[in-house]
Image (tube, rainbow, N blue to C red):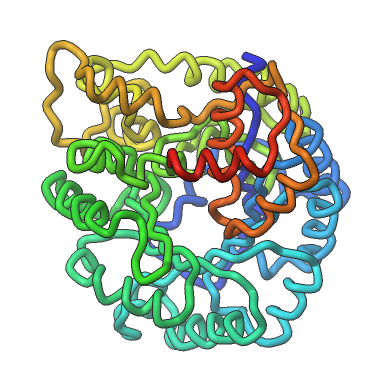
Length: 412
């Protein structure tokens, strides 16, 4: 399984939080593991991740990560190891001082939850009066100080009809990216009613019509692999097909670490792959039976016989939450597959990076090419790097030069 390396690791650094959001997934935690990892354990975890992939993106989330006093120490350590660090927060603790602290630590950006354009609706959902106002003021502070941020919205039955207004608000506030998350009914979310498969398709078609860009702001879907199928049906050359993040990356290039060190394939799948306190992150990533099994991708039901399996593959966490198995079909997908795989879907899939990174045949980036890559927006940099490396390998070359970026851009 050495072809799989962690490109994205989400670490819930704490379970502490002052909000009471009904969809919070952190309540769904495998038993065992003990209390929250301390600073020394956290620094060791960062070193272990960097040893597998020094270019990995590390998302420090919670709970509310801004409640953790040693957060600056953790960020600096990850930066020192060459990793890209992003903080995921509710935004209610963002103020001028916190924004300056995050910038001084070298954080690459933050992801902030905003679930309604209407303040009262957001406050109700978050369970805290004034949450919307504090979050928006925090985002304006980020804008003033130049801290890159993305707005993250979870689609629910309550805000399903308000998504265009939330998109407008995110753009007006200066977000670099708008991430639309689709609910996985786990944790506290087990008691929530999800949107219907028809509403799911309708929302993804609306998202696909943006082409992944809204007035200069990137628009992306999370926990919604079906977007790739919908985008391919509408336009096989859609820019959305170049974005791996909409595909389920659980266990292939992504995992989550809980506050107590337990590793799960993703934040929405409460099943343990092992604990870093007991075996270390490297052992869990490479040798966990759960992660190895998921990488074999032997899917069942409609997902297993779908002509878009290579392109989409469904959400494995949603299959686990609703069907009891990560290999089951994604029950929120309404697509009825053909008996034989579509040639068009296979062609499209072959042009899209499948979420795996090959260790063999490593490339060398020239200093000039690295400088060119530095002007690419941070949240798109990993995708561009992946595509350029794939292009250079196809040419049979081993050194990435600036002209390769130009040529690959024309193709993309």
